[in-house]
Image 1 (cartoon, rainbow, N blue to C red):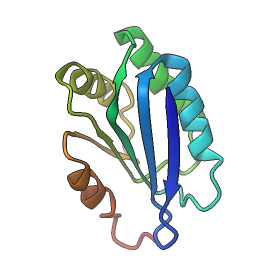
Image 2 (tube, helix red, strand yellow):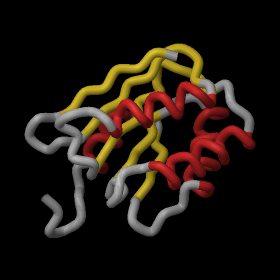
Image 3 (cartoon, rainbow, N blue to C red):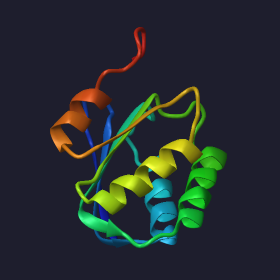
Image 4 (cartoon, helix red, strand yellow):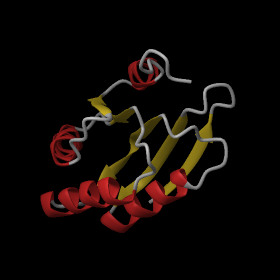
Length: 128
């Protein structure tokens, strides 16, 4: 998988665009790259999987969720959205949502990129 990271200079929101086939190690590498990105506020991110497809098992999904929960920055992001149009990937993303459950982070899986960006920009009241 290849990915690119864009950071909105005003809000610090990240957009990670992924292409090709996504595997377990790719997910970890992309997450680490985002966490190390200068300018990322750590508050919101959209993961754009429209041009990729998942090649992971349900066990891999659980392991990625556990990795994220264990190593994500503190405090964790307030909002995370995943965008994927494929039914099978949407289902796997929903599994990730359940495994990643964190009261500090609102998580949403959607099929529309603009919807994801709009929703992700809605930070909690008082958030910078």
